[in-house]
Length: 255
Image (cartoon, rainbow, N blue to C red):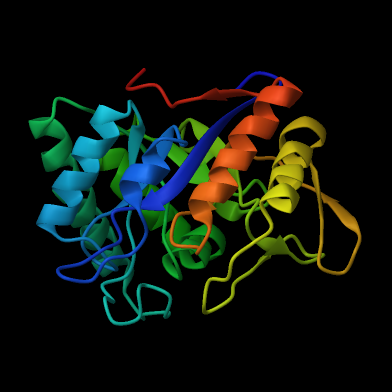
């Protein structure tokens, strides 16, 4: 990404059966990249296909959002898995989403881990390498989404992947640079979120819950479509970006 350019992403396709989470079609109007659940923590074949079709309709890049096989816990509980299990679970999830993309004539652009899978593959070196090996064997052209401070970011570069840094403007950060996760999503102040997003893109910094500022890079800003006022937040962010001259881009398909 060039200066003052950014991808706006959101986690999507996280409904399952009769249970509905988020308003994917409305969210699609404001984002340029979708991290789509692959059936483990959320998403079923109908949800996955409908999400891919929405992405095609709104010209949104589609990436895989693999997680633990944990529908009840929404992938937010740490599951003990072997590296062999992780490898094959990843191939399974990538393949499932890719099938729906193929049917719609689209290509997967990136991979972003969900929930508790994220810290496992981001900071546990053995699992980081397994995660990258699985993706490399499946499709080495996929862009790896990772926080810049993570082992995943450094290892992905070493593996030869294209890597995009990620930041979460609608979440809070502590002084260590870790996001503060709340069990129940609450409405957030759209203006405050937009200001945090602008600060990340233009100045590469964000204010923490302790009140100090830390450095942060986000070539992709990820928003959470299941928050109560997600659409309002995204609408304000896009308007403020336009005022600030920030260009919103999408991920390319293939290299």
